[in-house]
Length: 284
Image 1 (cartoon, rainbow, N blue to C red):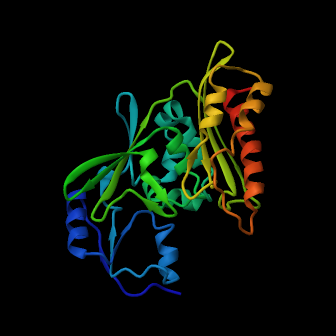
Image 2: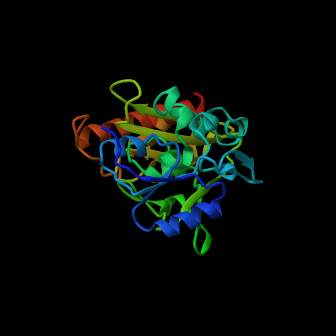
């Protein structure tokens, strides 16, 4: 199928985009990379009267060193995140996770911010961003506001982005020197994650001093595996200690049951993948 007819605008600035968004009313969609929006428009599951293309707004793309954090433009393509030296040096978890998204074609067209606003619970980017305690920067009619990652994801395909707002940047604290790994399970290549685990580990003198663990597709939003994080803090750097901590990976989760596996299967996967991810992140 092809989409219904719609008006199209391609603003050059965020201010221009906000003006168009305000004038368009409710029946409007923002176009980032189009890897999620265009397919649903073709199926007529989305039928906007206007599409506002953000692709010409240069200020929304790129990775900038912002002191103790990286400032990532929402329109930055996945491929740039996966290969950017600043990301690899300071937040390697994002580079590793983004490199697993779909296929090269999607990674060159799809955007970091677009995937996060889409908020698919099976998407590979929300959990790493949550684990990293990122901050979302939104522009709207009332100016700029910032939302913590813990408050950004609100449900299936639902975020804190309000009507008339645009996600402009994601600010991610630096974790220089931390080990990182993203472990996901799929039945076939390039499928959505059945379960995924994002792990960051800080090791000092044979001890895990701090860990941050994010879970993909274990609820309607990404989750932090806080019980695992607490069990790992201060644990010796051994496979046995890591395995003992990761048995808590499924605590507090609410995974769905579908054709790819029931909730019990996903809880089992969370434990297995958490162990693999933390061991890889710790480098043992």
